[in-house]
Image (spheres, rainbow, N blue to C red):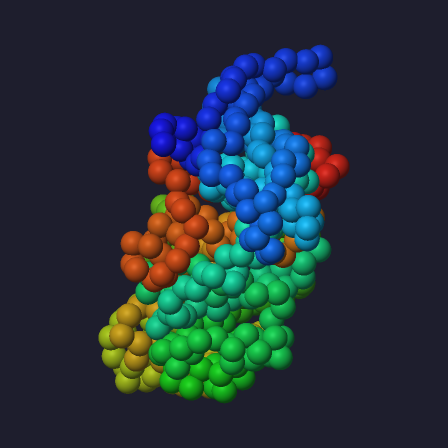
Length: 447
């Protein structure tokens, strides 16, 4: 049998009878290919063995991958019925998804486009409603949820993010390979414990990096038996910046309005800048502040902040030196109430001493920077379609082209959705909300 149609369209056992462009006043033009079944026909009933008789034909309406315009198929298939047991036979065609009324290649193309484009835009290309595209995409996600399993990371990052309408989400990453591993709805210890306890090969997790969230602590200790917890050092040192801000605000309470505005506008940002990163103008501001007796407490706070950052910077490899540097820093905090925030920071380090100093024990430079980057992508994606369900938001982020490429490149999965070649990376920039009109079907933003 001639397999030209199968080679061209991916459709088996059919012949092309006509091809035309259909136009109308109420719809956009589309190309219509009409096929007739050309395969084997069953004449004997598989149930009782009686001869089957013709029972008319059935016409399938199928959406194919768009070319210059949307493409539709009309496939005419025969039917046979048994007069004895009433068994109805009709052929099963290779190359179509009859449940979704799509060609197999259109199903793949549509879901891949849905990962990076708005459902309304994809629907316009395929001449389907945005809501239909959304439902097809959700079905795709549910199939992959059952069939796709990424390799459990040895170095795992955990962070939380708040998303409007969905609440708190927990983001899990593979820090070694810089890939997104999963997203969970909620961050309470019960939800985390249930997830990790049901995770296959959870004993292979050796290191976990997170902030000082207590639910993470309980989960890591019980559900990940071989994991050591290292607190992300950025979450630690940022508390030194918060302490400087606290000193500045306390001092501003006792200033005149003019001096308060001058301090806030002139020094608030500069005080958060590392000494090594100061511009000439910023360095000049701090030199002037050091000569002003009124600003002396603020400069003491700045020096405390810098000394705390230097615990990490000056001791990149020695945990003993880092610990000693912290003890020396803790003793250097002035006794004044003005510096209570620094004492709170010291107490935090003492409460989480093992986890914070595990930073120096980890065989790789462990940081949750990549996890924070994943959080940004989730926020941008959510801006694109306010009202997305958790399932859609998770799928659009987890199955991004760049994430799948890294996963495949590092051989971290045995099965996954196909990755399109030479197509844009999925990334949505989030403009201001008032600039959008929303699609009524999908709550997405019109371009």
